[in-house]
Each structure stands twice: as C-alpha cells, then as structure tokens.
Length: 484
Ligand SMILES: *[C@@H]1O[C@H](CO)[C@@H](O)[C@H](O)[C@H]1NC(C)=O
Ligand SMILES: *[C@@H]1O[C@H](CO)[C@@H](O)[C@H](O)[C@H]1NC(C)=O
Ligand SMILES: *[C@@H]1O[C@H](CO)[C@@H](O)[C@H](O)[C@H]1NC(C)=O
Ligand SMILES: CC(=O)N[C@H]1CO[C@H](CO)[C@@H](O)[C@@H]1O
Image (cartoon, rainbow, N blue to C red; front, side, top):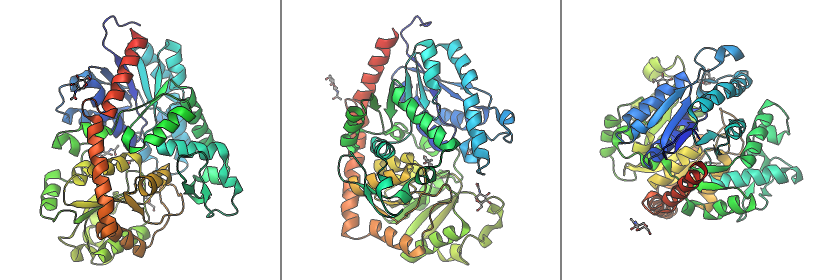
C-alpha cells in the first residue's frame, strides 16, 4: 500500500442515477464520520448535485469527502452531450449506448485507482468490472446494489430455479423457492426480458452484474438487521457471501437543510411546504411520489388525480416535470378540469424534486403512496408511515412483498404487471380504495403501530452499539486488517 499512515481511504463509485447517488452520498457522510477518507468518483454533471449535497452537510467531516471527476464518454457512444445520468435516458434506443458509456469508464477509473491507491472500492453493482480493477491493485471490491436482503434473495431464487416455467399463465401464482416464509409471485411481475426469456444487452448486463456480485469481496447493504433478519441470514448462509448492513443511510442527515437538499435542489421551498403541513392535523396527509424514473401517461395522472380527490384526504403529490407543460399553469391537460381549484387548501402538487425525507417525517403525514424503490421504501420505514405500494419496474415488486406481507405495514394498490417507466395502468377506484385503507380504520391503525415500531428499531440500529453501528465497526476493522 502506498499510504504510510493508518487512515483508511475508500473510493465510492455510485451508479449514474439519482436514486443510486443519494444513498452513496449518505454513505460517504457516515464513513467519513468514522474517520475514513472518502473519494466519490463520478462524472461532471452528476458531480454538481453530489457536491451540493455534501456542501449542505454541516457535518464536521465533510472536508474528508473528496470528489474525483471522470469525463463521461457521451460523444464516443453517440449520446447527446450531458446525458450522463439514467434519469436523462428517455428513449429505449439510448439504453444500450448508456451501457456502453458505463463500460468505457473502466479505463479512466482504473487510472484513477492506480494514481490514488485507495484501500477499498465500494462500487455499484452495475460496474461489474470494478472487481477486475480492484484485483489488479490487490484491494477488496465491495458491492453496493441499492436494494435489500429480501429482494436480493427472492430475485436470485427466482432466477436460479425459474419457477415461472412451471405455471400455465402469466397470472398464475408460484411460490418463490427456498425463501424463508411462503411468498407467492407471478410471471407478470418479472422484468420483461426474464418473462420472455429474451437474451439481449439488458439480460447480459444483468448477468454480468450478478456474476460480479458473487465473486466480489462482499456487499454493503442499506438496510438494518431487525428489519429483515431472516433474509440477512439467508443471504449470508445460503449464498455464502459476506455482507454488512449499515443503514438506514438516510438517518445520517440530521439538519433540516441537508435533508431538504438530498439528491437535488428541491423544486419547492421546504419552509413553505412544512408550514403547509404544520396547518394540517396529524396523520391527515397522504404523500404521493413515484421516484425519479417513472414517467406515467397523462391518462394515468388523471386517474391518480381523481382517486386523490375522491378519497377526500389532504395530499402532497410529486409529479415529474412534464416537458413543455410546466408553464401552462391551471390548464395542464394531465389534470382533470378544475382539479386544482377544487382541491385548493387540501392538496399540494410539487412539480419536480421534493424534500421527501422532511415531508415523510412530518407528523401530519399519515400515509405514503410509493413506487417501492428501495431508497423510498426505507425512507417510509424510517418515517413510520403505512404505505400504498405501487411498484413499476426494477426489483420493486419484491420490495412490495416485503412491505405488505413480511413487515405488514402497507397495502398494494393492485399493480399486476412490470412495465418499464410507464408502469401498469391503475384506475381511480383502486387508488381511492388503497389510500383509504392506509389512512383510516382499524387495519390502518395496526399498520401504523407496526410501522412506528420499525421506525424506532431503525433509530436504535444506527445508534452507538446498535446493529448497523456495530456492523460498520466490524467492516472498518476488517478493512484495516486487510490494509495495514
Ligand atoms: C414522459 O413521457 C412522455 C410521453 O408519454 C414524453 O413525451 C416525455 O418526454 C417523457 N418525459 C420525460 C421527462 O422523460
Ligand atoms: C437537478 O436540478 C436542476 C435544477 O432544477 C436540474 O437542472 C437538473 O437536471 C437536476 N439534476 C438531476 C440529476 O436530476
Ligand atoms: C457500547 O459498548 C461498549 C463496549 O461494550 C460500552 O463500553 C459502551 O458504554 C456502549 N455504549 C452505549 C451507548 O451503550
Ligand atoms: C430512485 C428513487 O427511489 N429515488 C428516490 C430517492 O429519495 C429521494 C428523496 O430523498 C426521492 O425523491 C427519490 O425519488
């Protein structure tokens, strides 16, 4: 090793999508607070929001976090300039180009590792070649896949045993093999390339990522032991892999300002938003957000609007900015006629990025309609609010199972089909019914109580000597032992 002192230096290399960068920035803050020197490796455009998040941190340790910027090879693969983030990849034709660009980052990344000689690389699962880079310089590569133990185990068992080949239709339930507790699933909830057994660049990309997962040094998980103990054990014992649970990472943001800045500048003044929430009764507001990737049709947005209006609850609804539509004001065609007038005072629409953590933990918020991306799901757990699960794609259908059947802190809106970006279509009645189920009545009360217990467990986990705190200690000890 080139460093002569005993300060551990870790390279963090997040995937280039907003949802993946948020937990990595949190992880950087957490690790630096334990005396580790951190270098976050990213590209020019992505470095702006990362650097803003770090700056907003009043943490004493922010000066221990460095940024290393690699040029993104957009021109080399034929992507428009500045298309450096999966959130900007809007047409299917751009996906293979984006993947090629990710792979082209290997050489500059390797050069950076050679130059700076970190003691460990924590890279996103979608950089499978980080294993090779780490092996070249003889350091461990840890994987970060931004998901949880439950979903990882479930999807691996489905991938390995292919139970979907033994059902007669896409909607006939099958049991997920080997998984602790009986959990059923359907073929329709699997990604289309699995469902249709297509071999293409996407399936190849996934295979490579999963293969690298099985051969890397270990995994860091944004989760905590008490949330999914059986599945954490399953991951370690059945798959025989090393894993450290160090979450919930979002809990390392303590100041209002840094919570508001998580990810990107909010499209709304957080004080205005909190003042509005202050004026509402406790547990009376439902917060609706589908993450940064989903892009629903106007018809779907109309159904959501009608469902929200019909259930009569207060709401905050985050809508992804619709290109060219944002200036039209009240006549936006994706809202039913007169909608904003009718819900005035009752509902708030945020166009763009919302200060989600601040909103969720406000006592007025009593329910969360979520796409079940892991970062959002865990934020819901930490806030102790029951959820309406509305998965779209990715591993979100497994996360839904964890929330509704294992933790029993949410109800499904009824989505049946995995559809990239646009999602399965849901009617207003389903929206209304699911929201009512988490907001009022005995069932809602029970879910809320359970959710509050998990929220407390999450706080205990990261407190001194808690399960996540101790696991991070163990990880640091092991890395030091390997390095010095
Ligand atoms: C969302 O989808 C619509 C088509 O339904 C498309 O016109 C628009 O550009 C997409 N927006 C984003 C931000 O991807
Ligand atoms: C962050 O917010 C700025 C300003 O609203 C926007 O221009 C930029 O595209 C956002 N970045 C990402 C990665 O979403
Ligand atoms: C944590 O554990 C150590 C060693 O067992 C002990 O000395 C310390 O007091 C504990 N801290 C807390 C906050 O319980
Ligand atoms: C992809 C994803 O789930 N992103 C979410 C991560 O958390 C922020 C708030 O902190 C959400 O706004 C994103 O939608």
